[in-house]
Every structure is written in structure tokens, then in C-alpha cells.
Image (cartoon, rainbow, N blue to C red; front, side, top):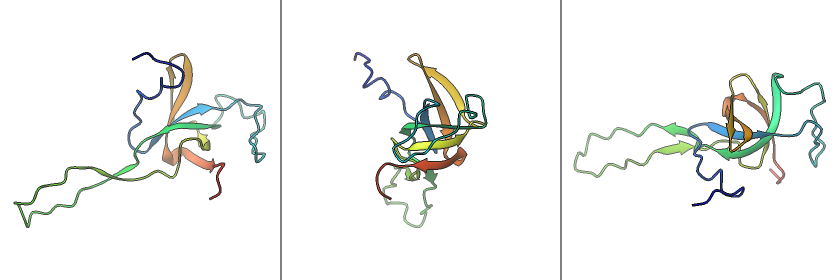
Length: 124
């Protein structure tokens, strides 16, 4: 399979309660007017970027049912989904996030607890 700009991130699987974020340009303003001032540049404590991919969420422990050992055990892991969704603009703490380069572009893997605020284009 040939990697293209459209499918290069399909190979990445984000685990747990983490999200993959691509930083937004510093001078960009959202359609609703959200704007971090120029003093908030790279290496500052707070950053903003778009969520590219999300993990499945927080795993829920499977209930222990030893009362009926003949039952088939459902081994499917269940998750509490994340509040963050792909396409959201996230304001997040840089401390606790992990910077990585993938296919020549910089991304951040950020746990959901480091996200301070989300802006979603659709109505809530």
C-alpha cells in the first residue's frame, strides 16, 4: 500500500485516553474568533492545535462472573469514550505531552487530562 497525504495517518493507532494533535499556526484565528496571543509560542506551557486522531478512551474493567463457569466469556474490552473528537481545536498543556515527528511533520500525543478546553465547530 502506498502512503499518501490522505492515508498516511491511518496506520497510526492512538491508545487509551490520548489524542494526536497537530499544532495550529500562531497567527491563525478560528471562525468563532478564538485566538491565543503571539506571546504563546512554541515551548510555552499552553498550546493549541487540531485533534487528528483519538484513542478509544478509558478501559472499563470486565465484571467477574464466576457464578456460571459454563458461560462464554465476552473478552471484548469496553471503553468510556473521550470527550475530545477528531477535528476539535484543543487548548492543551505542553507539560505531559509527547512531541514526535512522523512523515516529516510534528505532532503531539496528549493525554485527555492535559486538555484544558475544546472548540467544536458543530453545535453542542
